[in-house]
Image 1: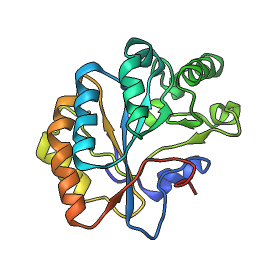
Image 2: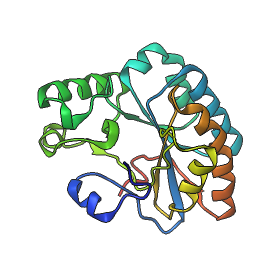
Image 3: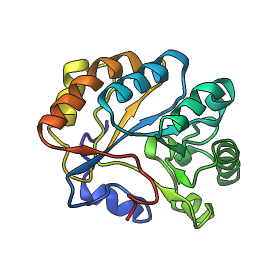
Length: 208
């Protein structure tokens, strides 16, 4: 089970995290988790370039090691990068020492103070172990491209029905669900542009 629109009560359990970025410019923030992957991430970058928008990629250290050229392309094309750990451990079921080691291993490769916990699941004790400069970036819109029960139309509707100014949207550029995401992404962008939303990467200028 997951929430397409993260309820306020859930956000209250991790007050140190950034769930959305309120602003007066009708700006929203599309993010991608789990890459970079050869075909999916490159196609994602092609779509973003065509539509002239910037996004944020929360990368796995293990995938960056496999595809350094794609990771560099993300940076070269002006998108933001964040740490999604090295090997995608779930914080709730991982001992703190092992979890922190995996996060720091990813951080050493990715070199970003933005961190998104895999699955969005991190213990308070693990939060307290992170560097104080680390910005934990979660989300308020989860379209569900990872769910086998969601088709492309459902991913699109989940996004359009829940987004609002300041929303952080999570999609995935991995090999498992990336093809559905790629079909949905251009339509999502077009519809959000029609609704007069602006797009931005998450960086020091946009963070609260």
